[in-house]
Length: 264
Length: 223
Image (cartoon, rainbow over all chains, first blue to last red; front, top):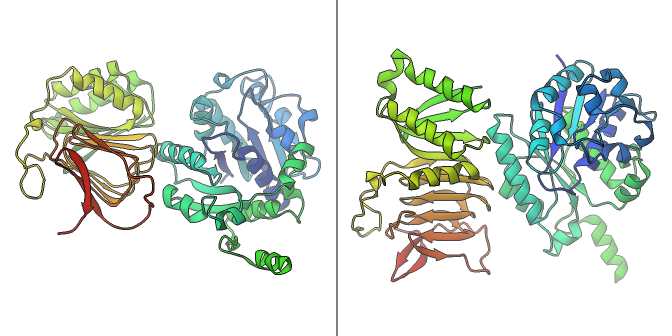
Protein backbone atom coordinates (compact mmCIF):
# COMPACT_ATOMS: atom_id res chain seq x y z
CA UNK A 1 0.00 0.00 0.00
CA UNK A 2 1.48 3.32 -1.10
CA UNK A 3 1.22 6.83 0.19
CA UNK A 4 -1.52 9.37 -0.34
CA UNK A 5 -1.68 11.90 -3.14
CA UNK A 6 -3.14 15.11 -1.72
CA UNK A 7 -3.86 18.09 -3.99
CA UNK A 8 -4.08 21.57 -2.50
CA UNK A 9 -6.25 23.91 -4.54
CA UNK A 10 -8.59 26.92 -4.21
CA UNK A 11 -9.89 28.37 -7.46
CA UNK A 12 -9.01 31.93 -6.45
CA UNK A 13 -5.36 32.96 -6.43
CA UNK A 14 -3.47 34.43 -3.52
CA UNK A 15 -5.34 32.65 -0.75
CA UNK A 16 -2.32 30.66 0.40
CA UNK A 17 -2.16 27.39 -1.54
CA UNK A 18 1.60 27.47 -1.86
CA UNK A 19 2.12 28.58 1.76
CA UNK A 20 -0.19 25.77 2.89
CA UNK A 21 1.60 23.18 0.75
CA UNK A 22 5.02 24.22 2.03
CA UNK A 23 3.99 24.27 5.67
CA UNK A 24 2.01 21.02 5.52
CA UNK A 25 5.01 19.41 3.83
CA UNK A 26 7.31 20.67 6.59
CA UNK A 27 4.90 19.71 9.38
CA UNK A 28 4.41 16.19 7.99
CA UNK A 29 8.15 15.71 7.51
CA UNK A 30 8.86 16.90 11.05
CA UNK A 31 6.57 14.13 12.25
CA UNK A 32 8.63 11.55 10.40
CA UNK A 33 6.52 11.23 7.26
CA UNK A 34 8.29 10.86 3.92
CA UNK A 35 6.94 13.78 1.90
CA UNK A 36 7.33 15.10 -1.63
CA UNK A 37 5.84 18.46 -2.62
CA UNK A 38 5.13 18.91 -6.33
CA UNK A 39 4.85 22.45 -7.68
CA UNK A 40 2.25 22.02 -10.43
CA UNK A 41 2.12 25.72 -11.26
CA UNK A 42 4.18 25.41 -14.43
CA UNK A 43 5.41 28.79 -15.66
CA UNK A 44 4.75 30.52 -12.32
CA UNK A 45 7.11 28.63 -10.06
CA UNK A 46 6.83 29.61 -6.38
CA UNK A 47 6.97 26.67 -4.03
CA UNK A 48 10.77 26.46 -4.28
CA UNK A 49 11.07 30.06 -3.05
CA UNK A 50 8.73 29.52 -0.12
CA UNK A 51 10.66 26.40 0.87
CA UNK A 52 14.01 28.16 0.37
CA UNK A 53 15.23 25.66 -2.21
CA UNK A 54 15.37 27.89 -5.28
CA UNK A 55 19.13 27.82 -5.70
CA UNK A 56 19.26 24.04 -5.81
CA UNK A 57 17.04 23.45 -8.83
CA UNK A 58 18.73 21.54 -11.65
CA UNK A 59 15.85 19.58 -13.17
CA UNK A 60 12.12 20.21 -12.95
CA UNK A 61 8.71 18.53 -13.26
CA UNK A 62 8.63 18.77 -17.06
CA UNK A 63 12.19 17.39 -17.36
CA UNK A 64 11.08 14.36 -15.35
CA UNK A 65 7.84 13.89 -17.27
CA UNK A 66 9.54 14.21 -20.64
CA UNK A 67 12.28 11.81 -19.61
CA UNK A 68 15.24 14.23 -19.65
CA UNK A 69 15.85 13.48 -15.98
CA UNK A 70 15.23 10.48 -13.80
CA UNK A 71 12.74 10.94 -10.99
CA UNK A 72 15.56 10.73 -8.43
CA UNK A 73 17.46 13.53 -10.18
CA UNK A 74 14.46 15.84 -10.22
CA UNK A 75 13.76 15.60 -6.51
CA UNK A 76 15.43 18.19 -4.30
CA UNK A 77 16.09 17.03 -0.77
CA UNK A 78 15.58 19.58 1.98
CA UNK A 79 18.73 19.81 4.15
CA UNK A 80 16.78 20.86 7.24
CA UNK A 81 14.41 17.89 7.04
CA UNK A 82 15.74 14.73 5.41
CA UNK A 83 12.21 13.40 4.83
CA UNK A 84 11.11 16.45 2.81
CA UNK A 85 11.50 16.61 -0.98
CA UNK A 86 10.50 19.07 -3.68
CA UNK A 87 9.78 18.51 -7.34
CA UNK A 88 9.88 22.07 -8.73
CA UNK A 89 7.81 23.42 -11.60
CA UNK A 90 9.35 24.31 -14.95
CA UNK A 91 9.61 28.06 -15.31
CA UNK A 92 10.07 28.30 -19.08
CA UNK A 93 7.09 26.20 -20.11
CA UNK A 94 3.34 26.51 -19.68
CA UNK A 95 0.45 24.39 -18.45
CA UNK A 96 0.11 22.53 -21.76
CA UNK A 97 3.42 20.75 -21.09
CA UNK A 98 1.74 18.18 -18.82
CA UNK A 99 -1.30 15.95 -19.32
CA UNK A 100 -3.61 14.34 -16.75
CA UNK A 101 -2.27 10.89 -17.60
CA UNK A 102 1.38 11.90 -17.16
CA UNK A 103 0.58 13.45 -13.79
CA UNK A 104 -1.26 10.32 -12.63
CA UNK A 105 1.69 8.14 -13.70
CA UNK A 106 4.19 10.41 -11.92
CA UNK A 107 2.22 10.44 -8.68
CA UNK A 108 1.76 6.67 -8.82
CA UNK A 109 5.53 6.27 -9.04
CA UNK A 110 6.11 8.70 -6.16
CA UNK A 111 3.45 7.04 -4.02
CA UNK A 112 5.57 3.91 -3.86
CA UNK A 113 8.36 5.74 -2.04
CA UNK A 114 6.59 8.46 -0.09
CA UNK A 115 3.87 8.61 2.55
CA UNK A 116 2.50 11.89 1.21
CA UNK A 117 2.62 13.37 -2.28
CA UNK A 118 1.42 16.99 -1.96
CA UNK A 119 0.44 18.66 -5.23
CA UNK A 120 0.38 22.48 -5.18
CA UNK A 121 -2.26 23.32 -7.78
CA UNK A 122 -2.22 26.52 -9.83
CA UNK A 123 -5.11 28.97 -9.42
CA UNK A 124 -8.01 28.75 -11.84
CA UNK A 125 -10.07 25.89 -13.19
CA UNK A 126 -8.27 25.33 -16.48
CA UNK A 127 -5.75 22.74 -17.61
CA UNK A 128 -3.38 23.22 -14.70
CA UNK A 129 -6.14 22.66 -12.19
CA UNK A 130 -7.33 19.57 -14.05
CA UNK A 131 -3.97 17.80 -14.18
CA UNK A 132 -3.39 18.67 -10.52
CA UNK A 133 -6.70 17.14 -9.47
CA UNK A 134 -6.41 14.06 -11.70
CA UNK A 135 -4.01 12.07 -9.48
CA UNK A 136 -5.51 13.16 -6.16
CA UNK A 137 -6.75 10.73 -3.57
CA UNK A 138 -7.72 13.63 -1.34
CA UNK A 139 -8.33 17.26 -2.27
CA UNK A 140 -7.81 20.11 0.19
CA UNK A 141 -9.53 23.39 -0.57
CA UNK A 142 -7.88 26.53 0.79
CA UNK A 143 -10.25 29.43 1.35
CA UNK A 144 -9.93 32.84 3.00
CA UNK A 145 -12.94 34.25 4.86
CA UNK A 146 -13.95 36.51 1.96
CA UNK A 147 -17.02 36.25 -0.22
CA UNK A 148 -15.04 36.09 -3.47
CA UNK A 149 -12.79 33.33 -2.19
CA UNK A 150 -15.75 31.31 -0.88
CA UNK A 151 -17.54 31.70 -4.20
CA UNK A 152 -14.56 30.35 -6.13
CA UNK A 153 -14.06 27.53 -3.62
CA UNK A 154 -17.70 26.53 -4.09
CA UNK A 155 -17.13 26.33 -7.84
CA UNK A 156 -14.03 24.19 -7.39
CA UNK A 157 -15.76 21.88 -4.91
CA UNK A 158 -18.50 21.32 -7.51
CA UNK A 159 -15.87 20.39 -10.10
CA UNK A 160 -14.09 18.01 -7.72
CA UNK A 161 -17.38 16.37 -6.74
CA UNK A 162 -18.19 15.83 -10.42
CA UNK A 163 -14.97 13.79 -10.73
CA UNK A 164 -16.30 11.20 -8.31
CA UNK A 165 -13.47 11.73 -5.87
CA UNK A 166 -13.95 11.61 -2.13
CA UNK A 167 -15.45 14.83 -0.80
CA UNK A 168 -12.79 17.55 -0.49
CA UNK A 169 -11.81 18.95 2.90
CA UNK A 170 -11.46 22.58 3.84
CA UNK A 171 -8.68 24.77 5.24
CA UNK A 172 -9.74 28.28 6.22
CA UNK A 173 -6.67 30.50 5.95
CA UNK A 174 -5.89 34.00 7.23
CA UNK A 175 -8.70 34.04 9.76
CA UNK A 176 -8.81 37.17 11.94
CA UNK A 177 -11.01 36.50 14.97
CA UNK A 178 -11.02 40.17 16.00
CA UNK A 179 -12.55 41.15 12.65
CA UNK A 180 -15.11 38.36 12.93
CA UNK A 181 -16.10 39.64 16.35
CA UNK A 182 -16.66 43.09 14.92
CA UNK A 183 -18.79 41.53 12.19
CA UNK A 184 -16.35 42.62 9.48
CA UNK A 185 -15.27 39.18 8.34
CA UNK A 186 -17.07 35.97 7.50
CA UNK A 187 -17.04 33.63 10.49
CA UNK A 188 -16.09 29.96 10.25
CA UNK A 189 -19.76 29.06 10.48
CA UNK A 190 -20.62 31.38 7.56
CA UNK A 191 -18.02 29.71 5.36
CA UNK A 192 -19.06 26.19 6.34
CA UNK A 193 -22.72 26.99 5.85
CA UNK A 194 -22.17 27.72 2.18
CA UNK A 195 -19.52 25.15 1.35
CA UNK A 196 -20.86 22.35 3.56
CA UNK A 197 -17.75 20.16 3.44
CA UNK A 198 -15.60 18.81 6.25
CA UNK A 199 -13.36 21.36 7.97
CA UNK A 200 -9.74 20.20 8.28
CA UNK A 201 -8.36 23.25 10.03
CA UNK A 202 -8.32 27.00 10.56
CA UNK A 203 -5.12 29.01 10.16
CA UNK A 204 -5.01 32.42 11.81
CA UNK A 205 -3.61 35.48 10.06
CA UNK A 206 0.05 35.68 11.05
CA UNK A 207 2.57 38.32 10.02
CA UNK A 208 5.33 35.77 10.46
CA UNK A 209 4.10 34.16 7.21
CA UNK A 210 5.29 37.13 5.18
CA UNK A 211 8.81 37.21 6.59
CA UNK A 212 9.08 33.44 6.49
CA UNK A 213 7.99 33.35 2.85
CA UNK A 214 10.55 35.99 1.94
CA UNK A 215 13.30 34.10 3.76
CA UNK A 216 12.31 30.68 2.47
CA UNK A 217 11.87 29.41 6.00
CA UNK A 218 8.33 28.01 6.49
CA UNK A 219 6.72 28.88 9.84
CA UNK A 220 5.96 25.23 10.53
CA UNK A 221 9.72 24.76 11.13
CA UNK A 222 9.26 26.69 14.39
CA UNK A 223 6.99 25.94 17.30
CA UNK A 224 6.17 29.47 18.39
CA UNK A 225 4.22 30.71 15.36
CA UNK A 226 0.40 30.54 15.63
CA UNK A 227 0.05 29.80 11.90
CA UNK A 228 2.81 27.19 12.08
CA UNK A 229 1.07 25.47 14.99
CA UNK A 230 -2.20 25.49 13.06
CA UNK A 231 -0.52 23.86 10.04
CA UNK A 232 1.01 21.27 12.34
CA UNK A 233 -2.41 20.37 13.73
CA UNK A 234 -3.76 20.04 10.16
CA UNK A 235 -0.84 17.76 9.29
CA UNK A 236 -1.67 15.60 12.32
CA UNK A 237 -5.27 15.33 11.15
CA UNK A 238 -4.03 14.33 7.67
CA UNK A 239 -2.10 11.53 9.38
CA UNK A 240 -5.36 10.34 10.92
CA UNK A 241 -4.75 11.68 14.43
CA UNK A 242 -7.68 13.05 16.32
CA UNK A 243 -6.63 16.61 17.20
CA UNK A 244 -9.15 18.85 18.91
CA UNK A 245 -10.02 22.11 17.20
CA UNK A 246 -8.62 25.09 19.04
CA UNK A 247 -11.33 27.55 19.90
CA UNK A 248 -10.50 30.55 17.75
CA UNK A 249 -11.98 33.25 19.92
CA UNK A 250 -14.43 34.57 17.36
CA UNK A 251 -16.80 35.56 20.12
CA UNK A 252 -14.36 37.16 22.52
CA UNK A 253 -11.51 34.97 23.72
CA UNK A 254 -9.11 34.86 26.63
CA UNK A 255 -6.37 36.94 25.03
CA UNK A 256 -8.81 39.59 24.05
CA UNK A 257 -10.30 39.80 27.51
CA UNK A 258 -6.80 40.37 28.89
CA UNK A 259 -6.03 43.12 26.46
CA UNK A 260 -9.33 44.79 27.25
CA UNK A 261 -8.45 44.53 30.94
CA UNK A 262 -5.18 46.37 30.38
CA UNK A 263 -6.69 49.04 28.23
CA UNK A 264 -8.99 50.07 31.02
CA UNK B 1 -14.45 6.13 -19.63
CA UNK B 2 -17.70 5.30 -17.96
CA UNK B 3 -21.32 5.77 -18.88
CA UNK B 4 -23.87 4.99 -16.26
CA UNK B 5 -27.60 4.51 -16.59
CA UNK B 6 -30.02 4.94 -13.77
CA UNK B 7 -33.77 4.76 -13.87
CA UNK B 8 -35.41 7.53 -11.88
CA UNK B 9 -39.00 8.57 -11.54
CA UNK B 10 -38.29 11.61 -13.72
CA UNK B 11 -36.74 9.58 -16.48
CA UNK B 12 -33.55 7.83 -17.43
CA UNK B 13 -30.47 9.47 -15.90
CA UNK B 14 -27.45 9.03 -18.17
CA UNK B 15 -24.11 10.14 -16.73
CA UNK B 16 -21.22 10.60 -19.16
CA UNK B 17 -17.71 10.05 -17.79
CA UNK B 18 -14.32 11.31 -18.94
CA UNK B 19 -12.77 10.41 -22.26
CA UNK B 20 -12.51 11.42 -25.90
CA UNK B 21 -15.94 12.52 -27.17
CA UNK B 22 -15.89 10.12 -30.11
CA UNK B 23 -15.27 7.17 -27.79
CA UNK B 24 -17.97 8.24 -25.38
CA UNK B 25 -20.50 8.54 -28.18
CA UNK B 26 -19.55 5.14 -29.62
CA UNK B 27 -19.82 3.48 -26.26
CA UNK B 28 -23.20 5.06 -25.64
CA UNK B 29 -24.41 3.90 -29.07
CA UNK B 30 -23.16 0.39 -28.33
CA UNK B 31 -24.94 0.35 -24.99
CA UNK B 32 -28.19 1.56 -26.50
CA UNK B 33 -27.95 -1.00 -29.31
CA UNK B 34 -27.67 -4.02 -27.08
CA UNK B 35 -30.63 -6.24 -28.02
CA UNK B 36 -31.47 -6.87 -24.38
CA UNK B 37 -31.67 -3.16 -23.69
CA UNK B 38 -33.83 -2.08 -26.63
CA UNK B 39 -37.16 -2.31 -24.89
CA UNK B 40 -35.76 -0.71 -21.76
CA UNK B 41 -34.57 2.44 -23.51
CA UNK B 42 -37.37 2.83 -26.03
CA UNK B 43 -39.42 5.96 -25.48
CA UNK B 44 -37.41 7.04 -22.43
CA UNK B 45 -37.17 10.63 -21.28
CA UNK B 46 -33.48 11.27 -20.78
CA UNK B 47 -31.83 13.42 -18.14
CA UNK B 48 -28.22 13.93 -19.13
CA UNK B 49 -25.57 14.53 -16.51
CA UNK B 50 -22.30 15.71 -18.02
CA UNK B 51 -20.28 16.55 -14.91
CA UNK B 52 -17.24 18.72 -15.52
CA UNK B 53 -17.13 17.89 -19.23
CA UNK B 54 -18.33 20.73 -21.46
CA UNK B 55 -20.50 19.56 -24.36
CA UNK B 56 -20.57 21.55 -27.60
CA UNK B 57 -23.64 22.20 -29.72
CA UNK B 58 -22.57 19.75 -32.42
CA UNK B 59 -21.91 17.08 -29.82
CA UNK B 60 -25.30 17.64 -28.25
CA UNK B 61 -26.95 17.35 -31.67
CA UNK B 62 -25.19 14.03 -32.23
CA UNK B 63 -26.55 12.85 -28.90
CA UNK B 64 -30.10 13.96 -29.65
CA UNK B 65 -29.93 12.22 -33.03
CA UNK B 66 -28.70 9.06 -31.36
CA UNK B 67 -31.49 9.23 -28.80
CA UNK B 68 -34.05 9.83 -31.57
CA UNK B 69 -33.04 6.53 -33.20
CA UNK B 70 -34.23 4.86 -30.03
CA UNK B 71 -37.30 7.08 -29.71
CA UNK B 72 -35.76 8.68 -26.65
CA UNK B 73 -36.08 12.38 -25.87
CA UNK B 74 -33.63 14.58 -24.02
CA UNK B 75 -35.55 16.63 -21.45
CA UNK B 76 -32.90 17.95 -19.06
CA UNK B 77 -29.21 18.61 -18.88
CA UNK B 78 -27.18 18.91 -15.69
CA UNK B 79 -23.67 20.20 -16.15
CA UNK B 80 -21.40 23.09 -16.91
CA UNK B 81 -22.60 26.48 -18.12
CA UNK B 82 -21.15 25.87 -21.58
CA UNK B 83 -23.15 22.68 -21.86
CA UNK B 84 -26.28 24.50 -20.77
CA UNK B 85 -25.77 27.19 -23.37
CA UNK B 86 -25.36 24.53 -26.03
CA UNK B 87 -28.60 22.94 -24.84
CA UNK B 88 -30.32 26.34 -25.11
CA UNK B 89 -29.17 26.75 -28.69
CA UNK B 90 -30.23 23.27 -29.69
CA UNK B 91 -33.61 23.65 -28.01
CA UNK B 92 -34.23 26.97 -29.72
CA UNK B 93 -33.91 25.23 -33.07
CA UNK B 94 -36.34 22.46 -32.13
CA UNK B 95 -40.12 22.68 -31.98
CA UNK B 96 -41.26 23.46 -28.43
CA UNK B 97 -42.09 20.39 -26.36
CA UNK B 98 -45.74 19.58 -25.87
CA UNK B 99 -45.43 20.13 -22.14
CA UNK B 100 -45.60 23.88 -22.54
CA UNK B 101 -49.35 24.12 -22.81
CA UNK B 102 -50.47 26.81 -20.44
CA UNK B 103 -53.40 26.23 -18.16
CA UNK B 104 -55.26 28.37 -15.72
CA UNK B 105 -53.87 28.32 -12.25
CA UNK B 106 -56.06 27.03 -9.50
CA UNK B 107 -56.22 28.59 -6.05
CA UNK B 108 -52.77 27.41 -4.97
CA UNK B 109 -51.08 28.79 -8.04
CA UNK B 110 -49.73 25.41 -9.08
CA UNK B 111 -50.08 25.00 -12.81
CA UNK B 112 -52.26 21.97 -13.51
CA UNK B 113 -50.11 20.93 -16.43
CA UNK B 114 -46.99 20.38 -14.30
CA UNK B 115 -44.86 17.78 -16.05
CA UNK B 116 -42.79 15.33 -14.11
CA UNK B 117 -40.53 16.95 -11.57
CA UNK B 118 -36.76 16.69 -11.47
CA UNK B 119 -35.42 15.83 -8.04
CA UNK B 120 -31.92 17.12 -7.32
CA UNK B 121 -30.60 15.68 -4.10
CA UNK B 122 -27.40 17.65 -3.50
CA UNK B 123 -26.01 21.14 -3.11
CA UNK B 124 -26.10 23.05 -6.39
CA UNK B 125 -22.78 24.91 -6.38
CA UNK B 126 -21.46 28.04 -8.05
CA UNK B 127 -21.17 27.61 -11.83
CA UNK B 128 -23.61 24.71 -11.94
CA UNK B 129 -26.89 25.04 -13.80
CA UNK B 130 -29.98 22.86 -13.48
CA UNK B 131 -32.43 23.15 -16.34
CA UNK B 132 -35.62 21.18 -16.67
CA UNK B 133 -38.80 21.23 -18.73
CA UNK B 134 -40.98 20.68 -15.66
CA UNK B 135 -40.78 21.41 -11.95
CA UNK B 136 -37.46 21.23 -10.14
CA UNK B 137 -37.19 20.13 -6.53
CA UNK B 138 -33.81 20.60 -4.84
CA UNK B 139 -33.12 18.86 -1.56
CA UNK B 140 -30.06 20.84 -0.50
CA UNK B 141 -28.90 24.41 -1.03
CA UNK B 142 -28.67 26.45 -4.21
CA UNK B 143 -25.49 28.46 -3.63
CA UNK B 144 -24.63 31.93 -4.93
CA UNK B 145 -23.40 31.66 -8.52
CA UNK B 146 -25.61 28.63 -9.26
CA UNK B 147 -28.73 28.75 -11.45
CA UNK B 148 -31.94 26.76 -11.49
CA UNK B 149 -34.11 27.24 -14.56
CA UNK B 150 -37.42 25.40 -14.74
CA UNK B 151 -40.42 25.65 -16.98
CA UNK B 152 -42.53 24.69 -13.98
CA UNK B 153 -42.10 25.52 -10.28
CA UNK B 154 -38.90 25.55 -8.28
CA UNK B 155 -38.96 24.18 -4.76
CA UNK B 156 -35.80 24.23 -2.65
CA UNK B 157 -35.72 22.29 0.58
CA UNK B 158 -32.79 24.32 1.82
CA UNK B 159 -31.32 27.77 1.23
CA UNK B 160 -31.93 29.35 -2.14
CA UNK B 161 -29.21 31.94 -2.76
CA UNK B 162 -28.40 31.63 -6.44
CA UNK B 163 -30.36 32.73 -9.48
CA UNK B 164 -33.71 31.05 -10.00
CA UNK B 165 -36.10 31.20 -12.93
CA UNK B 166 -39.47 29.47 -12.66
CA UNK B 167 -41.91 29.32 -15.53
CA UNK B 168 -38.96 29.95 -17.82
CA UNK B 169 -41.01 29.49 -21.00
CA UNK B 170 -43.48 32.18 -19.97
CA UNK B 171 -45.65 30.50 -17.35
CA UNK B 172 -46.46 33.31 -14.92
CA UNK B 173 -48.39 30.97 -12.66
CA UNK B 174 -45.21 29.21 -11.64
CA UNK B 175 -43.98 29.61 -8.07
CA UNK B 176 -40.67 29.55 -6.25
CA UNK B 177 -40.56 28.19 -2.72
CA UNK B 178 -37.63 27.71 -0.35
CA UNK B 179 -36.92 27.20 3.32
CA UNK B 180 -34.67 30.24 3.09
CA UNK B 181 -35.58 32.41 0.13
CA UNK B 182 -32.73 34.84 -0.48
CA UNK B 183 -31.94 34.45 -4.17
CA UNK B 184 -29.45 36.67 -5.98
CA UNK B 185 -32.19 37.16 -8.53
CA UNK B 186 -35.63 35.63 -8.85
CA UNK B 187 -37.49 35.36 -12.13
CA UNK B 188 -40.96 34.05 -12.82
CA UNK B 189 -42.00 34.03 -16.45
CA UNK B 190 -41.02 37.46 -17.71
CA UNK B 191 -40.86 39.13 -14.28
CA UNK B 192 -37.60 39.80 -12.46
CA UNK B 193 -37.04 40.58 -8.79
CA UNK B 194 -34.11 40.56 -6.45
CA UNK B 195 -33.91 40.17 -2.70
CA UNK B 196 -33.86 43.52 -0.85
CA UNK B 197 -30.37 44.56 0.21
CA UNK B 198 -31.16 44.56 3.92
CA UNK B 199 -32.31 40.97 3.99
CA UNK B 200 -30.34 38.83 6.38
CA UNK B 201 -29.68 35.41 5.00
CA UNK B 202 -29.98 32.39 7.21
CA UNK B 203 -33.36 33.01 8.82
CA UNK B 204 -35.22 29.76 8.55
CA UNK B 205 -38.53 31.13 7.39
CA UNK B 206 -40.03 29.22 4.52
CA UNK B 207 -41.35 31.57 1.87
CA UNK B 208 -42.99 31.39 -1.49
CA UNK B 209 -42.73 33.80 -4.41
CA UNK B 210 -45.40 34.22 -7.08
CA UNK B 211 -46.67 36.79 -9.54
CA UNK B 212 -49.60 38.86 -8.31
CA UNK B 213 -50.82 41.98 -10.02
CA UNK B 214 -47.94 42.50 -12.42
CA UNK B 215 -45.18 41.96 -9.85
CA UNK B 216 -43.44 39.25 -7.91
CA UNK B 217 -44.51 39.06 -4.28
CA UNK B 218 -43.07 36.96 -1.47
CA UNK B 219 -45.24 35.47 1.25
CA UNK B 220 -44.76 33.19 4.21
CA UNK B 221 -45.10 29.61 3.13
CA UNK B 222 -48.06 28.61 5.18
CA UNK B 223 -51.21 26.61 4.57
